[in-house]
Length: 398
Image (cartoon, rainbow, N blue to C red; front, side):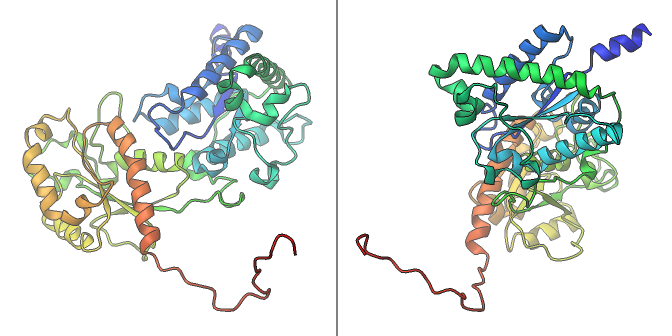
């Protein structure tokens, strides 16, 4: 019994679901972190809980995010969704929402329980910017300060004249979280694997769906490695390649990239360089290549073919890997020799030394790949004339 009570006390009161900023991702979420800490403080005061809330920034870069997120989603009492235009564009936020909702429905089927999902406005939103299925949610309770509805949490945090209204908003939100947790009384229960879920938002909000990104991995499996190469960073297949593996970073680079692309609002189409795709894919592409791989007879030949119509390149060079550190110059020359066009593209990063550097480089290379794709993709005009005549400019006095 004492163990069970202790486990209950350590459950997070709320799970904060939010979209990471696409601009300067290394520090742009500090305002979200401040809000999270302020809300945790007020909930802690109101409930005396040991664990007021969960925010994924608590997880070290490159660790097993999906498992830890799933654990928090399986144990939190309520789900706080930080509404913003980026939130509904993020496939990953949508999957967090779907995972929690399945858990909620499994426990409350046939019961008269209030919603355990609490929206919080990060930025002011027009009703058209919110998916139609969420229009019935009470986004701004009447007792909240008026500036909250007009400026959103981010606005009243940034503007000094609203400091007191910000404090009141957070305090009232803490009260909602406390009361809703008690009313819903959700027990801990497993949630589906996040990768198996679909976002309920993608395609539901005008302009929210972003193009998929074709992510090509060029790496060897353990049985393909050259003699003497350390097997620590490799697995049974190229998908298990983990160039930055350490105690704090155990996620394969492909899964790490997929997770980041989800944060950016993109779905991923993952391919292996030496495996022909099942069907042609028309999408902006990023090639993540192991510099140790380019001299492999089969993979090297395939990379030369890819470079005829080059893709943007990201090449992890783990500075903590003694073999890589000792062979940087040779590996860099090999990479440039096999992929001269891709490595020369604006945005390509032919030397990425750490997980943090990879997190910084990927959004930049995706932006450049998307820009290049939109410039080079054929745009097909409508085949039939519009049914309405084109509008013409009129004099203001007419």
